[in-house]
Amino acid sequence: MRTIDSSPPASRLPLPDSLAAAAIRPGDGDYDNVRHTYTRTGSPAAVIRVRDHEDIAAALAHARTAQLPLTVRSGGHGISGRSTNDGGIVVDLSALNAVKVLDARSGLVRVEAGARWGDVAAQLAPHGLALSSGDTGDVGVGGLATTGGIGLMSRLHGLTIDHMRAAELVLADGSPVRTDADHDPDLFWAVRGAGANFGVATAFEFQAKPVGDVIAAVTVFDAGDTAAFLTRWGAAVEAAPRTVTSFLTLMAGPGGKPVAQAMTVHAGADREAAREALAPVVASGPVLQNQAFVTPYHQLLPATHAAQHAQQPLAVSRSGLLEHLTEPAAAAIASLLVAARAPMVQLRSVGGAVNDTPSTSTAYAHRTQNFSLMAATLPAGRKNLDRHWEQLHPHLKGLYLSFETGTGPRQLQDAFPGAVLDRLMVLKSRYDPDHVFDNNFALPSADLPG
Ligand SMILES: Cc1cc2nc3c(=O)[nH]c(=O)nc-3n(C[C@H](O)[C@H](O)[C@H](O)COP(=O)(O)OP(=O)(O)OC[C@H]3O[C@@H](n4cnc5c(N)ncnc54)[C@H](O)[C@@H]3O)c2cc1C
Image (cartoon, rainbow, N blue to C red; front, side, top):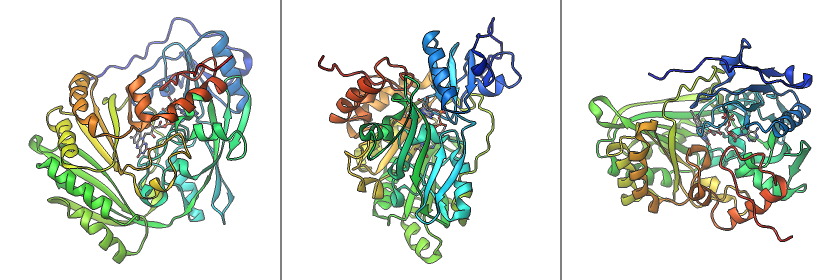
């Protein structure tokens, strides 16, 4: 069992009055509820629950002057775990959590970065609107919307960032900026995939889609013949209409035998259409259990707002994207579960509408792939996972940062292939020349002439 450090540091970080009013420091009653994240324990000197862009600017300036580690947090659900630190400042956006419908007819909404996606879904539902955002309601808006957003309706509606129409950020020098296709378009491009490197995102405008009830099937498969099952599931998902998006979790079942649980969503409430669309996916393996139900979309991802306490011990994860689940790729994925004994292997379907967006439109440039893969393990299992991941790597095409914990040149090159990384490095030099926002997947600067 993991022990969680709850000892306060020796002395309290002195802060200017304006920041002290928003700060939670060791010794404060709420400190144990805000110091950790979903995957990591932390001991920050101060968590600043910012109230506006002025607080953010003050927190950035203070961290820079005092040369303290700086971390940005929205929901604290980052898989990389880097939204806490030891001895530094956490800019916590959880109080900036408003969700506002700007125009119900066109679906234009403004969402602050500290909101949770479950709350966004619940608040848009009465307007008959939704944004496809991921499968977990407690995930924060800021972390997901600066990286991609692979949701339960991705094949019909694309990634979350594909619906972004504007972003508001506080830059490294403390200045607030609103960027869209006509204002700082380079920054707007960069925010949609590599946002954490450029500033503190405070709010976004999105074009939500009309969405009502959906039909979801939760299916448990016997995945004993793991590679063959994956190949069939992959082919069925690719052949399915775009209304169908399927997320699959592979794990060791009773007696260590591989089982797979699929959450497959038909984005629509027509039962007959759903039956026809879902049937081939459900038929892709021996079914142990299957349950289909009609539900309002928002009920698929409730937000609990439970305090984070590093409750997820699988703190090492690897991420990759695949165009197809070919037999060799499926065999290599099966070995992650069986030989590498990764306790969790997940596949999420992308493709469909995700691939309608040109690869040059956003810094997330992966627009030919059909699957996102994640494998997670305990820290003690890292070497074993990495050894098997090397065999899989030639079958991968790119990486989705939100599911990766490793940092290094290869991760950056896989996440931002070719010219994408070059362009991001030039923009890093322009918008964050002093590398204030280097805490999570830091981009290098480009050597600019002069
Ligand atoms: C249980 C679970 C399920 C998930 N399912 C999905 C899924 O289905 N689809 C999917 O796409 N992703 C999914 N994710 C991944 C998730 O999108 C990322 O981990 C995301 O970063 C979490 O956002 P957060 O705001 O909660 O993270 P935080 O922990 O608050 O932040 C993570 C990182 O994002 C950056 N960041 C956060 N807020 C801001 C901001 N306002 N401005 C600039 N940078 C910021 C920082 O670098 C920070 O270290 C899942 C994660 C978990 C834990």
